[in-house]
Figure 1 (cartoon, rainbow, N blue to C red):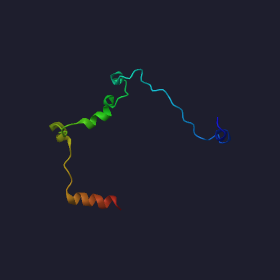
Figure 2: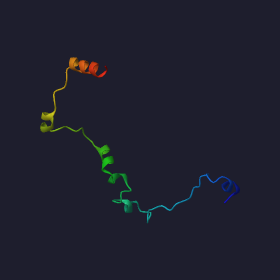
Figure 3: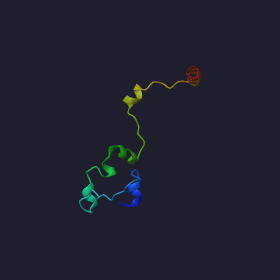
Figure 4: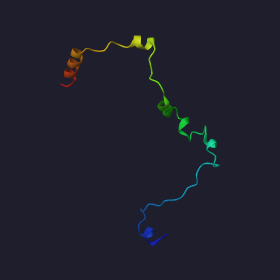
Length: 79
C-alpha cells in the first residue's frame, strides 16, 4: 500500500477482474443470457410493422369521449 492509502482508508481501490468468458468465441455466449438478443424485453425493438388489434379487441374498446365531455372531465379533475 502507498502512504496515501494508509492515511485515507476511504480511498477507492480498483482491481482488474477476469472476464467471465471461457473462450474468445462470441458464439459461446449465445443462450447464456449475456447477449441482448436473448432478452425478450429488448426484442420488442425489432418490430417491423405496426400492431393492428384484432376485431375482438376493437369491439371491447369503449367509444372515445367528445370534446365537450373531455373538457368537462378536465375541469372536474382540475378543481
